[in-house]
Amino acid sequence: MARLILENVNVDIPIPSLRARSLRTVAIARARAIGGQIINSGTDISVMRALENVSFSLKDGDRLGLVGPNGAGKTTLIRVLSDVYQPTGGVYQREGTLVPMLDLNLGFDDEATGSENIFMRGLMIGLSRKEIESRVDEISAFSELGEYLDLPLRTYSQGMRLRLMFAIAVTVSGDIVLMDEWISVGDESFKHKAQARLKEVIGQAGILVIASHDNAILRENCNLALRLEKGRITAFGPIDEVIARRTERRANARLFLRIRSALSASLLDG
Image (cartoon, rainbow, N blue to C red; front, side, top):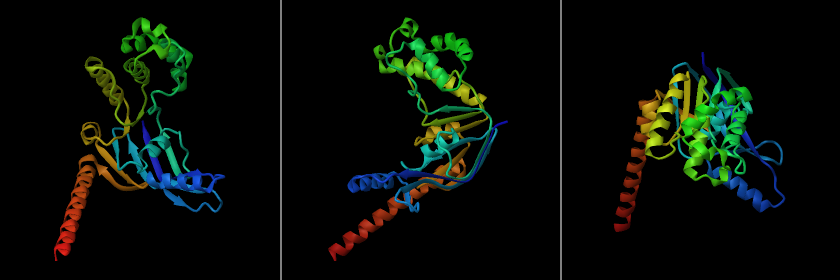
């Protein structure tokens, strides 16, 4: 059984004091630009609060889409769920094995062959050498790279690299699949096969959490949605309700701007 429980989770990211005040100012400005809140840490180290009092729970069958503007905290939340970031406050509990599909490029060596990279990436995502050996033929066949697997990765085209990375990623199955944007790779023929395999991995999992700006993908794959703004939850519930509320807010914002523009023009004419 798969479960995820978060209770009042905070994530604070320190911004160390830099020798040059101007550089420190730039660092803080950039933190604010991506939506974080600068808070007083009680020291000379400024802190960006990337997540604040985030609470929700997921169970078997839940498919959660994370929505919100850039810098809202979606990637930070995915990294908390995948154990990349540890909460600085609150409680995070998990039951079930993880399948984090976050950075497919991590752990690859351009000077190593494709076959060697299969082993290195496999070890990085938690497979034993025996488990990797049992999956080599499957990965090789799925990637369709053939004899290129004996060549250094630096000789690959971008499309070939992505096919190898994806083939390794989807060889792992587990209870909780985490994705920071939907994965789509290869030409049309490979893309069709890749999407079918990705759907299979997700279908076998108990829980899916995916961050995306694509409402169509979220509606197709999720039954729940969670909206973040500046690190805080502003909506959580059925996917259609959360997305509809998001669309309504955008429409109201556009209407307000049109009214304000019309009033400004009227005052100038007067």
